[in-house]
Image 1 (spheres, rainbow, N blue to C red):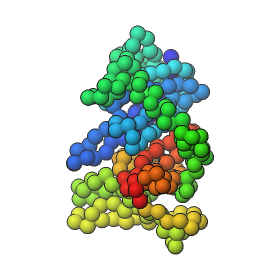
Image 2 (image 1 turned 135 degrees about the vertical axis):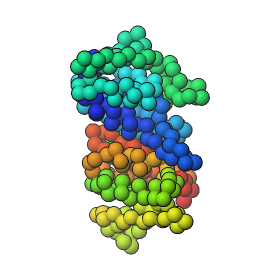
Image 3 (image 1 turned 90 degrees about the horizontal axis):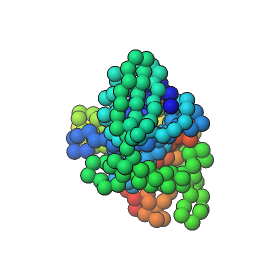
Length: 275
């Protein structure tokens, strides 16, 4: 049996969905997931729907050990809103039971179900693929290990960024209903105390936010990202660090790593891969 706080599990699954706007409609980037309880943390590790542009490792406190298969995050969140307080979760015969004070709800939980609608890969296969990619990323020292075993450190690291300030910057993408889901981060080596975030277009409002930072780096960069950053920062309430690698030599652009503590992170590829 695994014990968690209901509101913590709701937060975990909501953040994991990584909702973003595409063509004016909100889309979740994650449909299903396997939760693993170990060493006092209930964690998930998963690539997003396209299997390439983003990977996340998220966790919350828990008691107990085991594995929970969530075949449909939306359905599970629909269940959790009818529970509250401490939640006991047990798994048997491909079923997951959620038990609060005086309620118990049962859901199917088979890891051989599809990871996403219209995708032939199973939840188990998607979890294995995600774990393989995740093993290359170290959120503690912000390094990426290549297939050859070389460790590459982030070239730019912005420590202790306030997530409310980050949210206020990226949410301007929604100004006058734009919602382009495109966020441009830039750092000018000639102005070392500023990290700029640029969203929107002039037709309905282009906004540049300048965040005060402490960084002494002789190299500048500019990169754009998708990935529903507005949804991410809206669901965080503590400082984070953000690192960027320089993978332009292999047409990989400037991948971003948002570190959340407890080994948790969100990895996001850049859009302008060749520059």
